[in-house]
Length: 235
Picture 1 (tube, helix red, strand yellow):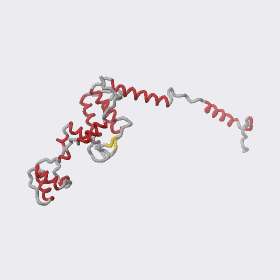
Picture 2 (cartoon, rainbow, N blue to C red):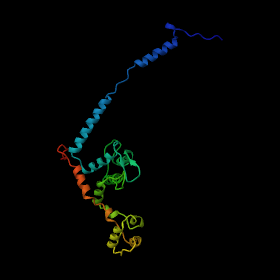
Picture 3 (spheres, rainbow, N blue to C red):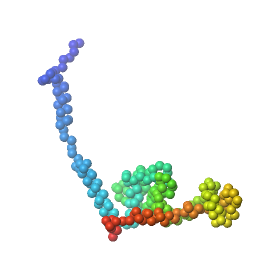
Picture 4 (cartoon, rainbow, N blue to C red):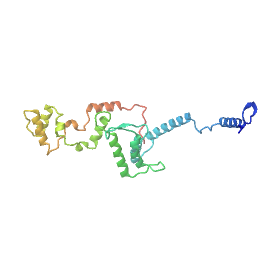
C-alpha cells in the first residue's frame, strides 16, 4: 500500500504539528494564578504572630491549668529536640505530640480535665529531665526538680557489689562507719561485709542525693539574670 501523505500547512509543517504548537502556546501563555499572600508575606505573618504570641504570654492573664498545658504543647513544637534520659535516642516533636494530643480537640481548642493534664505534664517531664551523664544530661535543673519532689526517697539501694566497687577505700570505710560495720584490713573484705549488711538495709551514697551543688546554683542564677528590657510579669 502506498504511504499516506501528510497534509502540509504553511511553511511546510503539517496540520497536526500546527495544532499541537497552538495548543502548547496556549498552555505557556496561560498565567499562573498568584497566591493571595507571597512567600515574603508569609514570612512577615510568621513574625507578626510570634511577636503577638510572646506579648500575650508575657502580659495576658493565663489560668494555671492553661499555662501548664501550653508548656506541654511547647515541647511538641517542630523546633524542639531533646536528648532524653528515657531512651538512647534524641526525641523531637514526633514523640512529644503524643502528650500534647491528650489536651486538644479536633478543632484545635484546648480541652482537658485536671487528671489528664497532670498525667501529660508528668509524662512530658519524664521525657525531658535527665541526670544521666552524656548528651541527655539536663544539668542542675534536673537536680533542683528532684529535690523539689523528694526524688531522694526513690533512689535504689546502692549497697551492691557493682556500685561499691566504684568507691575508694576511704569512701568504703566511711560507709562502713555510718552503717556500724567494722572495717576490715583488706578493701575487698570491707566491701563484702557492706554487701552482706545492705542486703537488709538500704544504702544511698551522699554523692547520689539530688541536692544541687551551690556553685551550679550560683551559675544558673547569674546566667539567668533578667535585664531591664525583659517582659513584665502578667497582671
